[in-house]
Length: 555
Image (cartoon, rainbow, N blue to C red; front, side, top):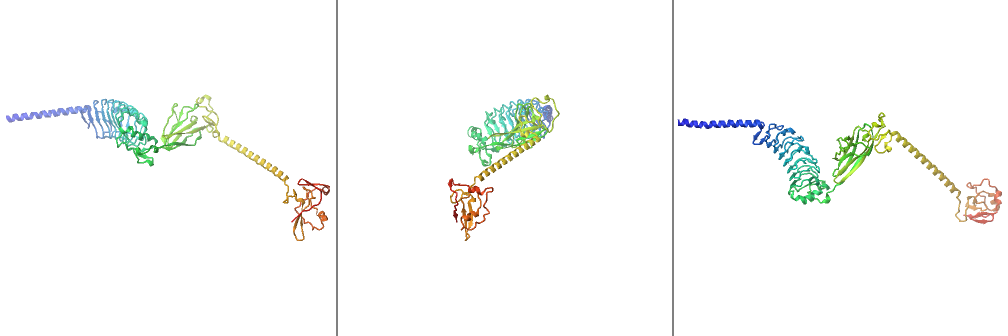
């Protein structure tokens, strides 16, 4: 009996243990059925569903849950309804998934969320609508994603955010107002990105900043980064550790691998942009497609944008341009102008050209060194495709359409004329030029003839013996017995008339040989011998002489 009693007492605790185990199992099953997803581990107000290969957020999580672990799964998206029931959620960890899209308002119901981990995913675009409702968020992990740029006012709803982790992304550009609203931010980590520059205005809203990490970025050390070197030496001393102060330049090549703090301010330079548009003016037909290239150069590479120049007579038309290989079309947007900037070359595409496209377009390029602007003029030719005549009110009141072959919003010029008109004008100008040239040649030839005739009338032979003006008619050529040539001047001969009278000379001087026949001697036709003998005087060098025969012989 003692043995039996002791055995009965020993069996009683066993039954109690089995009963307790059964009750706890039932309670656990009830709790699991009420708020714990299958295969997840749930305890207190925490649900742990990590590393389970989940492709979406479980829907059976209890609404009172405060902490959810969903790390290391295959979740690709976060929809607005996925977390709508978890209004008491304070900590959400979804790192190392494949999340690429966050639906706007996905966290609208999480007004008590304090910490959100989205690092290690494939997020590439952020905007302000994603974080609406997270007024009490303190820590945001976005490291290790594929974010390329931060747009203006992306985090404006996170006014109580204290830590923002953006390291190990591909951020290339940080807009000036991207961090607006982060007045409580104490830690900002932008290390290990593709940042080449950062403006001082971008950090100005961070009035509570205590830790800033900018290392391991390919910094471009130019004039736009001059402020950062000064800031690190002054205000940045308390924000940057000794490691964080090592801002290393990647470009330009002459400053590569140098610390920004070691580069003098004179070496941080920029080259203002230069813009080239070809062609500057185009006449297009209705319905054509047009592409215009805008080349921009400078250092750093300028941002290029196209826009339609506003005109009082033009309709509400705007233009935008994107880099080579991307399309930008002219659209009517109620008077609003759209600017799409990018680096390098900008292409302006105009499709199905109409009268509304006519006007001027501006290609603008800007960098920290300055801004450049070139105008492109588009005219629309209406002569190729004339529409049927319409009443005057059929056209918009803001567009002034005429029946001329070409349409231009502002002015007409030679290039705006039709091909036939241009050809006619060119032929007319050529004929006028040819006539003018012929007149000039005729006037010149006539003037030259007159000048030559006047010169020949004034020609007078002057001998080498200073005995006054003499004509060749007064010279006689003789040859003596030895063959010596002699020239005899007969001053009885008239000054301006010549003749040859060998007989008279022989009678006056019988001892002289016969005169030689001078074929070059010219005789004045029509002059009579009596007229010569009647002369009593002749003039030589302004002196009067008696008519006599006088010879001068020169050997």
